Amino acid sequence: MKTKVAIIGAGPSGLLLGQLLHKRGIDNVIVERQSAEYVLGRIRAGVLEQGFVDLMHEAGVAGRMDAEGHVHEGFEIVVGERRERINLKELTGGDTVMVYGQTEVTRDLMEERQSNGAPIYYESSHVQLHDLKTESPYVTFEHNGENIKLECDYVAGCDGFHGVSRKSIPADVLKEYERVYPFGWLGMLSDTPPVADELIYAKHERGFALCSQRSATRSRYYVQVPLTDKVEDWSDERFWEELKSRLPKDVANDLVTGPSLEKSIAPLRSFVAEPMQYGRLFLAGDSAHIVPPTGAKGLNLAASDIHTLYSLLQKVYHEGRTDLIDKYSETCLRRIWKAERFSWWMTTMLHKFDGDDIERKLIDAELDYTLGSAAGLTTIAENYVGLPYENLE
Image (cartoon, rainbow, N blue to C red):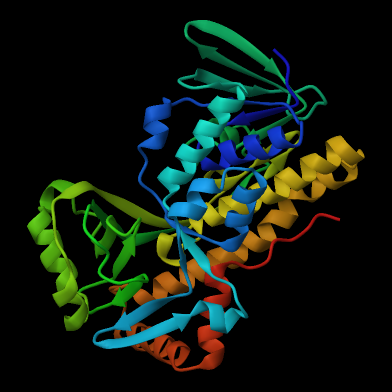
């Protein structure tokens, strides 16, 4: 089997890249180790930058997002009973974000892939990447008991943190940077109306909390918990009571509770792998970087990788610009490290850390200054809506 681009991973990154390439007449095959149902069942992010929204439009899959998504012009940061609204639209000259769940993004892209008939192999095992430093790389995998060899020009590694793509780069080439945070987020999904029209990020002496949403009738809430906690430790009743304790009284009083649809604990880490390219292999999304979710950057950072890779491959196939290939990693990493910085900064300011007294005082002063400064509010807003994509030239 032959194709131009082999895409490893059928999460939103791989599916989006596949659809963008398909629209431009660039053949591609997606190989995914999990089932379609498993991929669709992941409960993840829900805040999309304008750049991501624009890519969905360019991919021709924005219809349901436009109809059902919610444009947000701001969000709140609360510290105890103090409430500060970050007016994104005003502070950035008109930029906003879209609240539309990653599950729905994935569903839209899956359905489009199915309707256009572009090849995708779910439940593939023993995926291996070969000859990446040559002009004729290939991928081998097993599907439905058949051993398949997929010859290609390029490989896009969109298979996440635990995938095979990053592991295919030799250890003496790859450098990894990582910080693991000493807490996690316990998240609950419920069919209850959101407590507010916009997201609320709360810093409290008991720990961080986030009031998010998926629709007018479905909410996603989070509370900071120790890494030693287990989901079984948290009944729905205990979760709601803890969430209320971390919110301002007027917000807590408006909170509508109900049975959970899903509960999970996600550890927090900052992670970057350099370089993001090895021969004909390009890493994108979680295979190359992880951010703590405090800044809503995980899925959006993957989208900026896809924008860069899609732009690169267009220029390769339609303009013969192979000279740009070696610019992929450095171009992506400039934006990635800025998003890593923002996510680390927001996490540090808004969570409870067991540091020494002076560290806690300094962090509190940082947050107080930022929320009381026009420059500080603008910094939050500019990063939250997403820094501009960098074009390959």
